Amino acid sequence: MLRGFTSPFDATVVSLLQDSGADVIGKTNCDEFGMGSLNIHSCHGPVWNPVNQDCATDSLEARSAGGSSGGSAAAVAAGLCDAALGTDTGGSVRLPASYCGVVGLKPSYGLISRWGVVSYADSLDCVGILASDVDTTERIFHTLAVFDALDPTAAPLGLRKEVYQSTEKRLSSINFAKSNSLEGLRVGIPQEYFPSELSTEIIQQLRNVVSELRLRGAMIIPISLPSTSYALSSYYVLASAEASSNLARYDGVQYGSYVKPPPGTDITKTSNVYAQSRTAGFGEEVQKRILLGTYALSADAFDNYFLQAQRVRQLIKEDFNHVFAIPNHYSDSPVMTSSKSPKVDVLLHPSAIRTAPLLNEVSSGASDLSAYVQDVLTVPASLAGLPALSVPVKDSDRESERWPVGISVVGQWGTDEMVLAIGKVVQ
Ligand code: GLN
Image 1: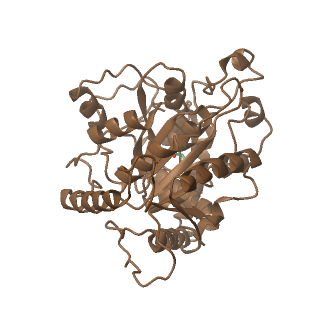
Image 2 (image 1 turned 45 degrees about the vertical axis):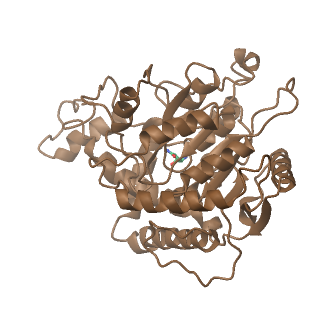
């Protein structure tokens, strides 16, 4: 739909990077309009995962770089750049980061400007950062996380300051200063983040990280986020509904490429004109999301799908608010201070249910549902607007050709500094 399109202006994130001296060296491949988890829905073809490169000389051996921002993750993993940007609506920075063995940050919703970024689902979209280590990710986060009046969903300055101060206060009470000690840090392990699809290899890697944190004095606390199993369904209803509305602008007349209707078409009916361009311009996955989203917003389905998904989203936010020690400064729902459940600073869980799959397996035969399930561990933080950082687990056996595994650190809204600090410990 946007083939050959060059934006007449820079996104705020691009200007901020350039103003601070960064070189923007190129655009990367991604799933069309950010829709996908495996980078197989791109008009440029799939992104090949560059890890263990020699395996990928044969297309039968090539693995997915993850999606939708797979090109960004692959570019960092291949050493083509120090860092890359991507968008994370439901996991599209964290999942490719996990598959490619790089760091991926989805910041708190509203901290980084979305001005100039193509919208997929406005209430979920975040600009994310991919880099080979947490320090670089943090430097770029500091450059980009500034208030931008052009983004109507930007978190106000007062709120940023308030949450920054509570994060600093909490961080200083954790004994980071004492070398190697994590005394005072409370890490929650959500029991619902171990679905049947999760590979045992990944559970083992998480166990190793948890044991190390415990050895260093962190308190490991099993916690429950009971609405987690509804997150994926809620996400796909809401994201598709918002996408159907956002993508309505690509009609081939005002925006997007135009395809002339065949001779004899009644062009006094404008939908006949739009249909040609939209059918030719959008890929199959995008068309599917538009149809699903339009249905969810139709009078017949609105209550049962869209409103129900909004209710689930509220429950998911409340689940998180119950477990975090720092209250949610951004939340529109009351914070339950009386809750007896143990409070934690961050949550730790696997970023993905598996390592990078073979492209050959996922582009042929595999059911669509299996692609959607890849997002099961990333969408809850997106629905709640929380900061989430995927960090690759160290592989002690340097000779091994094991595929990378990512572990996610998730914090309360606005505690991105804490999430990055813990990420440095995990990496
Ligand atoms: N895989 C999810 C989707 O297709 C997430 C995409 C994203 O974060 N951009 O909607």
